[in-house]
Length: 324
Ligand SMILES: Cc1cc2nc3c(=O)[nH]c(=O)nc-3n(C[C@H](O)[C@H](O)[C@H](O)COP(=O)(O)O)c2cc1C
Image (cartoon, rainbow, N blue to C red; front, side, top):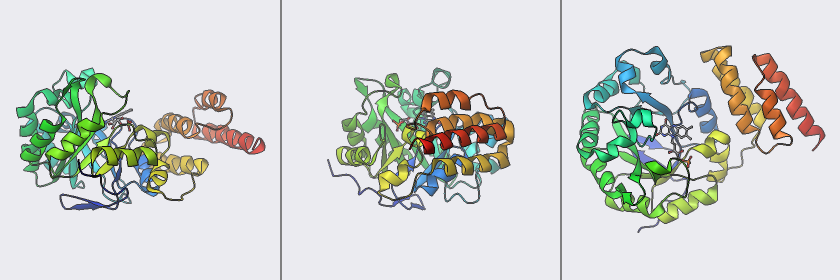
């Protein structure tokens, strides 16, 4: 196995250059434009929208379309689509909804039964011809196409290398390999050897995903897999500042400022009701590790308005200052 890429090195994906190789994963319910802006501000090299249903776009679902909202200040966010019909996926790639996206990722890893039973997400790991057809159809859109997939459906039946080759042969410009099987969901050590086998099978950039929570994890991931970059998921959701830590930056993690910026961005687009619900969740992640965390969380979840949320945050930050 060749040694992995240098941590922080830029990548070329199709005709897109990323400033570094530490990416923020697609996360359903989290990676909206306001969250992505925060991740970029801490150095993420590339962010993705959450998974968006190609069928939902075809049938004009406004809720689905909203998931693709991008802020003008975002550098080069990639859209992630899911589906099982190659023609519907291609139509989505070519639609006005995806006009601003130069890179489109296809989800072939989602383990959730609702998705899997429809032959979407990780189900495609068991349907090689359809997976190849999806990629080659989407490529006809002229956009750069990447694929994010798991190493297999079950432990002991790893298909990572064969699937990586399939993606490359069908025209993919990059792959992201989540080093867990479908039956592992999100727990357990990622299988570094399986990711390494995928990397060794192809020439296109390979991003390694799974269990990267720190700079040490990222270095280990690159070292053990030979991959070209890493993708961070839950660690970013809990603390978007992790990108700075992984990249060896010295940005300060000002939790209060981060919550304020994200709240202000969300308010402009989503309005108060949704913003409060989302920011209660985000703030409770960002406050992890502060004194009295559990009581603070309970209090946060009683907030029904932005001013209530700000008042509770004032109280939390004041009490943490006093006891510092
Ligand atoms: C709440 C949540 C939502 C997720 N949504 C998506 C998604 O929309 N698309 C996708 O490809 N993966 C999704 N994933 C999987 C992550 O992108 C990532 O592959 C997985 O969490 C492993 O990385 P980690 O160990 O760094 O968390 C999601 C994971 C979580 C926990």
